[in-house]
Amino acid sequence: MPLPGKQMAGKKVQVTGKSWFFEVDGAAVRRFMGVRAVLGRLGRRAYVLAAVAVLALLAAPAAGAGAATPVPPQVQLAIDSVQSKPEYERSNFGLLVADRDTGEILINQNSDKLFTTGSIMKTFTASTALSEYGTDYRFRTKVFRRGKVNKRTLKGNLVLAGAGDYAFGLRDESEDTMGYNSTPTIDHSYADTGLPGPTLLKGSDPLRGVTDLARDIRKSGIREVKGNVVLDDRLFKTYKEWPDGDISPVWLNENLIDAEARPTKVGKPAKVHWRPKTSMYKVVNRTKTGPKGSQASLELSQPKNGKLVLSGRIPLGSEPLLNNVQVGNPSALVRTALIDALKREGVKVKAKTVAKNPRKLLPGNRVMKSGKKVGVFVSRPMSEMVKVILKVSFNRGADFMACLVAVNRGSRTCEDGLLPIYQNNTALGVPDGTTYLYDGAGSDDRDRTSPGGAVALLDGVLGESYGQAIYDGLPIYGVDGTFRVDGLDSPAKGKIRAKSGNRVAFLTEDLGIVGAQTRMGFIETEGGRNLIYADLINNVPATSPLIIFDINDDMDTMEVSIQQGY
Image: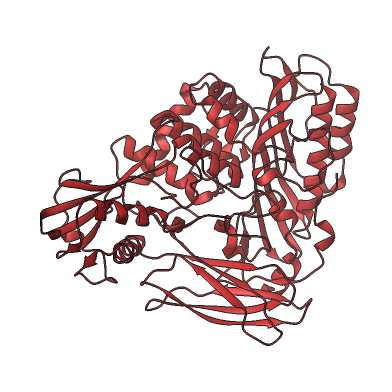
């Protein structure tokens, strides 16, 4: 099956930033138009490490070695036609396909060998988080007052206690659901990669959480705060050691400043929209509208003294471009946003609106639980938070889940959330020695699993109370999340759901390797069978990043043959 947007691959787009390092999924990668332009710009001046999570359904190559029954001829033919290609001569394939109802092994290739994982590791992390908290758990971000209220004036401090809600209202839809983008629209968390397609989620509001809390505070009878506003951000220590960025205990707009530019008239500044708009940051617009068909570029600088600069060129007639940067001090941002919201609701605050978080004013408890509660914001269920992570392959969200596992085990150190994932793997029947992880998202190239380990995890998950949440959270081929494909004409559409991942590294434009392209999930076959599978391919030499399109096509071919052949 052809890749949507593949005909766009020759166009140019400029990716700006410190280095070309990103992870994106599915059709997002299919729409990546500027790989050659980007690497050509970097040339031999820098080592370029790209982590690209290509998640369009890859039911992968495998032979029937070790299978209980012969592989159908049409399936074996598809597998052989792919794996015999010269470009895979030095590559490693692993595939395990089993009937989840009978346990029968249908396809088995290197199922006990270890492979680099990419983003399929999020499935392991998500399973553990659900096991620890339960599918229905909701995080409650509370505001307490410390002091008495006299004539509607609080003579004391307001304390917002972070509880573990990474969305904080950003993606909230109904009382029980959260929204997410489906390809070809890409999640905003990938906007700093320079890829075309990242878009703000329609209807999302990054200030929803603080606005609701401010209204609660006003309803409690407070009209003026004589003291300060302080964030209790002691849920866990901000963690900086994983590849995808800082993981902090409090979030606003998922700790990103988003800036979107739209073309106006040639030579004129582009129209810019940015968020979240608070008193803490301002964005200076230095973009220009370029001629139709010209090269596109967009760069958002790191904040300096509260100022960010958006620069670049947006071709006339093009879709909006989005870029973002990660916030350096989330606690200060949330504090400022809450004070801004209080003022909008008619509550006066004596303290400075823009200032460092005055943590010294916090009481001695590790996380504040005392004082008079004057506001609470309740998250959507844990199952929905996990669903977003799996559907869009949200890297920092998966890392955040590992931190929450640590918290549930009594630790404030995110890395302490990794051992419980190993323990949960064992409880689910994952064989010892088959899975190793060093972060929550699968972005660490030391992460490993085997096809047997991945299938064992999924098989074990099905027997747990949270199994349905994992099943529902996996992207569905051609339908949603990172696997939605416009106009897909395939008999396998809607019949496969899986998490997949990819790791790609390039030294120069024509010297690189696809370190991993992987998948684990479920297949509903044409013959009515329910299959569990894990498909992993490692080490494909590459003379162009565009090889990921070809690998994806090959895996699509094999996947559909499996879905149709059983």
